[in-house]
Length: 222
Image (tube, rainbow, N blue to C red):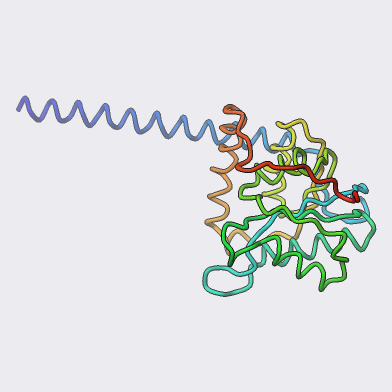
């Protein structure tokens, strides 16, 4: 009997802790979502004609193919958006920042190839091979490539987070939204984004630096 009473008390405490944890997580997600949305107001553009001219477009990297070998729509739409901005004269250079973790895999080089095919001259494209995370890509655009006023190119959800990163690092950035991919086709991406937004505040708290920095590069310089 005494054993059952102790067990009930333990389960009740466990339930209270679980409920409190869920409430705390929910409140955190709501706070982060609100902060991201407020920060992005007035900085997101969907129409090329209304997008302000910037010297550099920071094109955030993505894999060209998904795990089953199909083309990655996130990738295709980002390429299209960068090409559209360049040919409309809205940017002079494209800085591609992505993962180059192995000799066989290089997001910047894959994206550069497709930009060149689409008519952007190679000399107008710069590659950042150390954009392992969005945080690294945005901060390195400022600290390594010495840009502090550029347009970020990705899907809206990604742009919103990238703009928060820019704001927290004193970078004046806007963003051009590539065509979205329906959530139904990428529910895992949507869920991962919620956690990634919380992670921005963790990086801010700990003053996280990019995995690599290195020598500075002047875009458009000799």
